[in-house]
Length: 34
Image 1 (cartoon, rainbow, N blue to C red):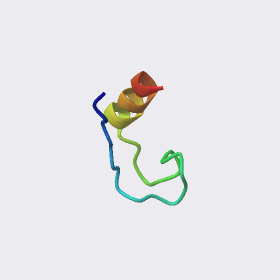
Image 2: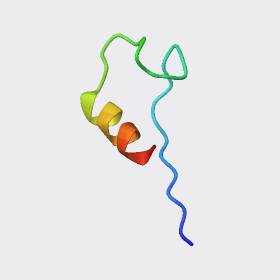
Image 3: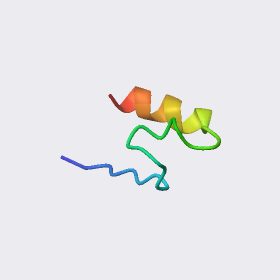
């Protein structure tokens, strides 16, 4: 089985939604992986 690891830039919290600007593409991609 293959593994896919995604590394996002560090933000002020684990969710990434409390940063200055939320990248909507990253949010959608993360939602599809769950």
